[in-house]
Image (tube, rainbow, N blue to C red):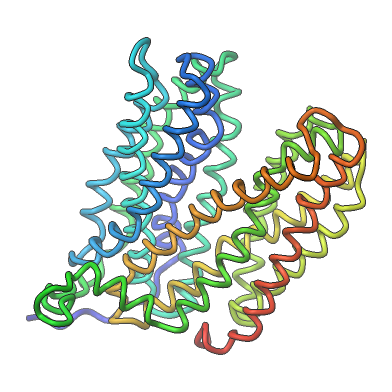
Length: 433
């Protein structure tokens, strides 16, 4: 057997080629979470109760299958074939989701969402784990993550703006968006799969290695048990959960806050675009800061920035458009760190373990927790607001005070808890870059 060639540092074009696939992967998420419910309720006539049940069922299956896909992806010698398997499922599933039939829309939606979720999850997990194997050093892995997440933020921006530019009606706009998405997915996949240099394949995990007792335990169960038994991973996961809820809470309530507290609903689109654009532009800053201070300390700085920003936002009221634009600018900057630095810490943990060959299992669990964070934020915030007396569209009295508290101050509490744990465990979560 030939010895693997030494891993030369990846050039900037190679890192950009790797990150390019992050653009269409991120683009797919926005219509699924934002536009699809309205499309099927308005254009396809699916009842809200049935629609909610279908969406919840599909999202739970999508989340719970991620660790299984991650551990399965570790069985092969290369990640690229898994990406090639996943992308047609993602493309076909999303195209079907955005073209509801005249009859039978409910089962069509469920099947299309499950196909889309499979393709999206497998492609995302394999792409992330591939980055672990490509990066020869902690610093290089951080730059690969930054490239992937930077393209992802651009994809989110594009997905938010494209439907309004393609057509006036939402159904027609989403149909045209689906065709455009096919072209972008094919182009970026070609750039990533052909533009990243082939490094020596890492050995697949032997099937016997997954069977701790040689009998009853499967390789899949053993892979998940291995990573969950690692103290550093459990600690990083705890910080990620607390910080993820803190980030998901204002994301869930953003439109409510803009409409009912600030009374500037017309500006919600530009404000959201500013938020994501700030995240894109600040990615190089956080990457450079991580090189100087370490990823954990840089992430902690971002948490403190977000906490201070939301404390200030609690004092805003009707008409405070420009002060809230500053809030979007600063919280968007912190978002850039949230996207890059925890994923970079995870990439380093995965890289230490078995030469990175548990990378799929790590990122599968990570993806599961990220999706559950979104669900938990909505499940916590919306019922709490109802109990506190808030009703959408009634911008007065105790209700909007409750909305301000849940939008601004509850995330601060979660951020501070996450930051405290991160500071306590900082030395066990990373190696020098």
